[in-house]
Image (tube, rainbow, N blue to C red):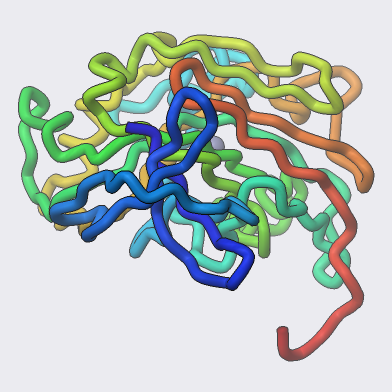
Length: 273
Ligand code: ZN
């Protein structure tokens, strides 16, 4: 099932199952419990993030060729960091380049997003995929200057500015993707291919990540894991390629779909939004 979260013209928010012909049929129940597709067609005015996760976990340097392009040494365990909830951005809504706390080095990162469906802890590799609700696309937008120069050795600041976690456009249930480590993945910037790989290049595959992340740590239902990005990031290019206002960036993953966001400057500062 391809699940979307949407707002209709009356402002109602719900989940629906998108059919091959584009029609959306309402879903009844709880995505993180029991749910079913109804026969009722809904009018989608706006796509939203497929769900609002209680926790957005991210993995750094998880593709072999990306680790090579950054010159990083491979680590024994996955490199884990968090993005915060304020960073979530809906499909089609703008990525805002930080202007108040300025960054001039904002980069794209296409990532397979894994959504955990059931509360779980100390999961074995062989059982890991049974805890997955489904898969989506993520863009781990990163301010490289705040990551490399001003982050104090950690990455969360650089990767948690508002709008730095576009997520969607749909959640594809795990029955449609038996092997999440065999998916083509790419980024297009203004229609030009800038990243192209396959999730088979991951150093720690999806079951290994779930096994590791759930170790001595409860994964709450709805937890989203951004599983790392392949080679081709703007930072590793000569000269570097940074996103600028007016750009459009798309993350495309086989069997899931395309997550597209325009890029703009952060609007003038406001102390309440
Ligand atoms: Zn990333």
